[in-house]
Length: 102
View 1: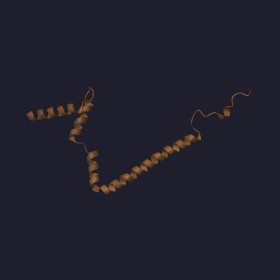
View 2: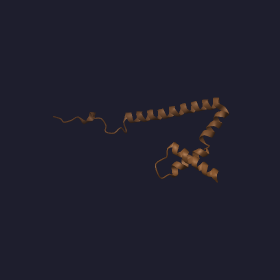
View 3: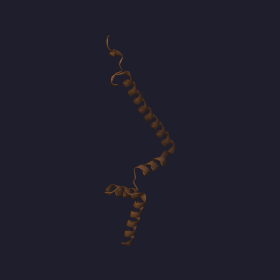
View 4: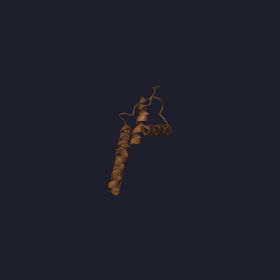
């Protein structure tokens, strides 16, 4: 009896094996392909959309409306659980009524 042949055991770690390198190459390939596809779609959309698309994106993503700022401040500074949309609308209406009375 010669014992157990340990030369054909699977490695306990993936590092340093062929599958480790293949897995990393596949991951980098997916990231690169996603970046290229996003760049192509974005450049085609901006070419077709022109100035209107740029202005719309700038307005939607960079400029915050007063309502959005108020909503974020209400959620950020409340010590209790986040308020629902109806409650926030009610609070905003009460605030407008208070300002109208003054």
